[in-house]
Image (cartoon, rainbow, N blue to C red; front, side, top):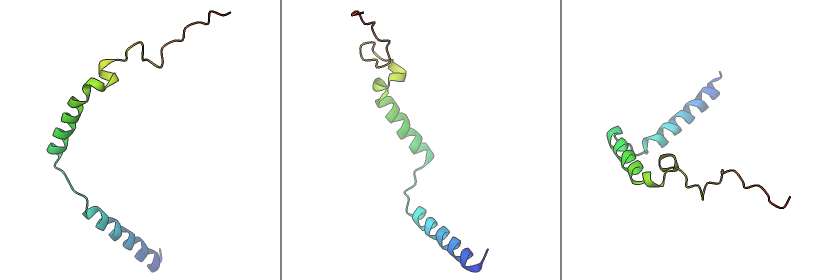
Length: 68
């Protein structure tokens, strides 16, 4: 790798590190608490937990056509 290529790669790395420096960090314990709270608040709307009502299920089998 040439000197110019090394310099370009190094500048990109420094630029990326400067961007990452400004990211607000959370403690894992706080993030886990927030995630748990969000899941519990929205559990009643989750079809994987509550199931899908038969009338609103878009994947229910269709009714046969009676015109034939």
